[in-house]
Image (cartoon, rainbow, N blue to C red; front, side):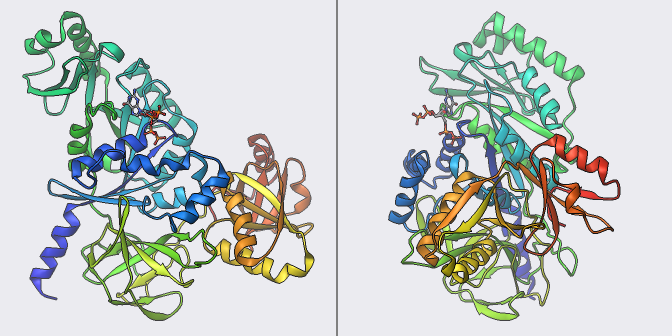
Length: 528
Ligand code: G4P
């Protein structure tokens, strides 16, 4: 391989940053994404991303909207250039769109930005998403948003990060005042202040200073706010954690930035710092060892499959994360599981509202492949021989229902639908050991509704769903075959699609009892 191409590949890898923004609904993810895209010039008008927030509506029109706009892939990945970087933002749907897809998307990110509302602190959905990222050990950067509103004290929020999420934090900047009194932020790393001026704070002035004690800040912010800033930062200097980049990269400590997305306060400095500190595309583990992004042989894996909601168009889009090498349109790659070569002729890249055909792409990039039904979640595409990437984790569902068909004559189509939609990763299917009932598990309620709709639309099957009270699943690994009679109270023993034993629990208490009663068993949060 020619040296010049290696260097080009290295350069492309070095400039890429692929991350997801994780947050609880309403923390400001749409607003922040929009501002980031604006800095990159990827969209001309603020409001473009907002428009896709059509997801704040009832389920029935969600279907309608999906139909009208065809495959709703446009919002799944956004790419833009900023300074020397090529940035890929992976969307993690919130609200009713929250699903296992959201978790799986995080496996394609090299880092995460955790967005927190200054008044609300760490909320439930943030905790779930954080845990998925923390398990992978990816760096997590925190942006505390809505600083223009009255909120909780920064120290209080740092304590909450530690108590609720178990992660220590290092403030990269610090608010000067808060809510209506907010007048700026002090950048601890660069020793500069960012002051928000004018009646509506719309002028942002950046000023280099000696330290936070610099009298310039006193002049600008007034005595009271400056005293408070000095007190806070003295305390942080003495009692706070030092900034340790290796710990950040291992996900053991989170750099914290304060700002206000809607007013653009602290957003650009956040973006600058984040892009500097966030990791470039990382190697991925495979059956032939770790695959470096700079390996010139093209490889990648499918982490999400999005179906077309319109029954007249059964095509799907498979989202591929490129791990190594250069992608070129029309190239032939091995679809390792299927054992055959395929030509990647219709790949798409997703940018704000448009779908463009992509001619070339590099590690860290996400491309959408037209899928006539040949891909499954976790599939490897490779020019590096018969290697496969580690399987993507199967996450515990959080909502369960018993499914049955209304018309027994349709059982063949019913089975086909269940098999295909399970493969696509839209639902998880379990069978009870005692009665052979079919139970479905999902992460978000909307998945059930979409499942019901697609079973009818695509397979012609009317189904009945009966909600169960289970709240989570644990895969049980034991040298002895599990005994269903031990899992009768607030729990049940089932098997997953691969025949693994799984216990569904109604609550933590039921799980603790089961752990006590089965000392030789291990209860795993993801499938073995
Ligand atoms: P999400 O995607 O995380 O769900 O949140 P989104 O950006 O839609 O923001 C949720 C609400 O919070 C929006 O208000 C938005 O304008 C507001 N918001 C976002 N960032 C800030 C901020 O820095 N300061 C303040 N004060 N508000 C912020 P909304 O009233 O629900 O919607 P809209 O009427 O503004 O569209």
